[in-house]
Length: 94
Image (cartoon, rainbow, N blue to C red; front, top):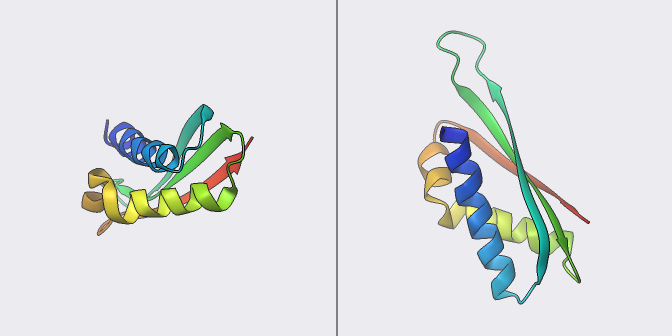
């Protein structure tokens, strides 16, 4: 549930940022991968948010900037988890 909240919150902020730039998104996906700590209890150590966007005229830089803003400014789930979990982001443009 925690990773689902992280993925959906960050994805929503990325989509809003791109729509503010008048990007017409045809398809959007956010794949969330993670690493656990080595010792018990096995907690989340790091998470990567991988945004896959299909849209005309969008650049990788636009998506990465939107992801950066989502992770560091807007997504409340990211902001609450970041002190303890390293959150990164990547993207692909289709």
